[in-house]
Image (cartoon, rainbow, N blue to C red; front, side):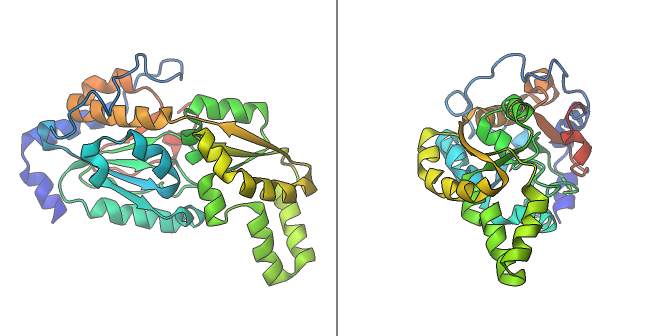
Length: 290
């Protein structure tokens, strides 16, 4: 049993996990701008094959982040990544169960990194078991693609009525045009139009978000097709170029947690939720100001 393996590992792992329990409540608040100093690049400056305290690293990520994660992923971790299908976020309890199954499948106490945000409460309630779970402190993948929580807050403060599109949303059919087609098939065009009016009539902008210019160019045709449909509510179309900075800092935070434990607390900042062993992922930790 995984729990038995945890108990048998002895004080080195137990002490490490105890430090992380303390860390989960002592992350330096700062001014919300992230780490006080920029950590060394995770891909170039750290030996991922060396695991102090024999703590393994596993990554569970949505497919939408595959293009941004793979270019910065250390070679030693390429086999440690599991990508899950886009569509899981559409049914939060399915995402929750899929994540729990992945966590439960790892027997040795490890750092299990989530390439997800809160995702419509899809990660809420996932149990860490004998592991530590570092998670981006975001509502969804949009902040990750934009490069930071601050960029996300800036965009939505400027235009609160923004509907974002990404590679994942487009490929999984999670957007107003696809919804209309599904509803029209079931209820007819008139009823489908009324249902979507209730959902989207107050939106002002529909924006394609990608971490690279190549991503914007590749998905702009599909995004414009959705945007044309959304003109019925007066939405304007924009493209927003993000970055891979959030993903890089997530990997750097994992290095710090693995190698330094609680001593890394002041450098990780408020952009990540750290769930220690024996806990559940709490929704309130994702709320701004918590």
